[in-house]
Image 1 (cartoon, rainbow, N blue to C red):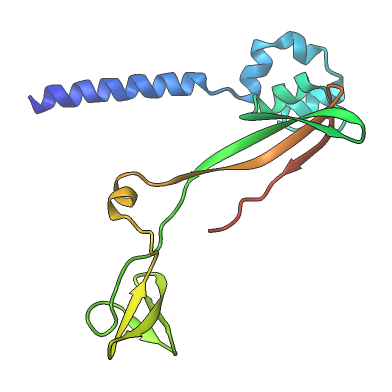
Image 2: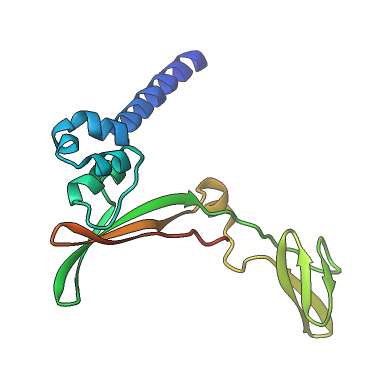
Length: 178
C-alpha cells in the first residue's frame, strides 16, 4: 500500500516538475524560438542579447530576448513623454532567527540594563511585580506558520524604462540583507 502511494506521489511530482521546467524560458530558447527578431538586431545588439545584456537605445523586442517577460509593467510619464517600466522580480525564502526564553526561569541569558540575548534573537529584560523577566526573539513569531510554510519575499532585482519603444534607462538592484 505504501509503495503504491509512493509511486503515485513520485509520478505526480515528476510531472509537476516537468511542467514547471517546460514553462521556463532562457535567452537561448527565446532566440531559437524567434530567430526573426534576433536577425533584425544589429550585430552589436545580437552580441549583447546573446549574453543577456541590454543597452540604452535598444528596442523592447531586444530586451525581451535578453531578459524575458517582466513580472510587472508600469506606465509612467517622464520629461513630457509617456514611459513604460518593466520590473523583474526574484523570490526568496525569508530566514527566521529567533525564539523565546525567560532569564532566570529557563533558557536564555541577560546582560546590561534591559537587554538580553538567547536563541539567536535579541530581547528585553523587564521588571514586573518584584520579578525580572526576559523576552527573546520575535514577538510575532508563530511556530505553526514558520514551521509549516516558510515565508517568501518577492523583490525587484532589475528594471528597464522605455520611451517610444526604446530603452531610456535600466537598473540592477541590490537585495537588502536580512
